[in-house]
Image (cartoon, one colour):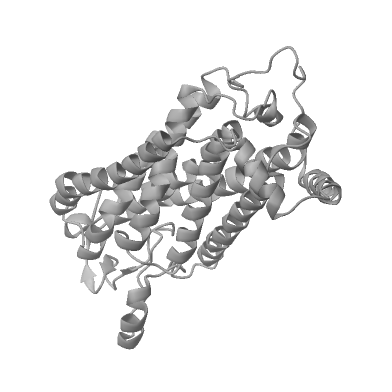
Length: 368
């Protein structure tokens, strides 16, 4: 049972997407009702449900571990052979050259993964985006996972396994890095358990709604690094970074704070019990998805702070500076270095009395 499309036994009419109030009202009603009806809920029932409904083989676990290790090696190889030489060739500022490989690697991966998710949702027979309740049509415990979705799960699951290691040991540590580690752990738990319990259909929808923002973020950061390359100021990269910032802000709200709750959470909180009345681990998966939504709101607050600073025409610094720079820069009286790189791209750049851009006290020649 692949669950690729809605068959004759499933509802023929697509249920309209609810409004926010409808989501909160119906989801809270359904979840409270399910909690009252679950008189035998507890550790013993959870153990039995896990043993009866989780399907994953040692071969799949070994393949996941090998792929996570492979992503780490691929990143190191690309960093040493391509990203670092490219940063040197572009003559990036030292601080930008140090950060550029991380953004380049993430841009490559998320572009690939989001493109594949887009292909599955819009160029195959899967109807999950347009009809989110269909993710639970014909669900059966231990049902087979279609090969194309299994490939997406292997790619994404192993990447987030790699990302936990990379955030701690490979990436620069930032103020939100601890939250990022928690995010990766929750995402990996969602991917692993949704695969084992055969909730892979909704998993593809979740991945599609989240990966697009990472593409825009890394694209914006790369253009911020590139606009000061070669000792000059490059207007094109500045414009592209500003466009990326605006696009990132809009799609973050649209995909993660609008479509994600109204499509995914409504389907998992309400539609799942309609299609499968005794669906396993109903509260566990919805708790993880709600935690993911809370983290999306947490990061959206950074975006709001950025927008407010732009509207007030103040110097824009990302509120997520590097931890190891706070003390030294505060002591020296310098401005803190921005991470975002999801800012308007002018943080750290000033205008000299002659009207030329200045960065770190050095006058820059403007170039296209």
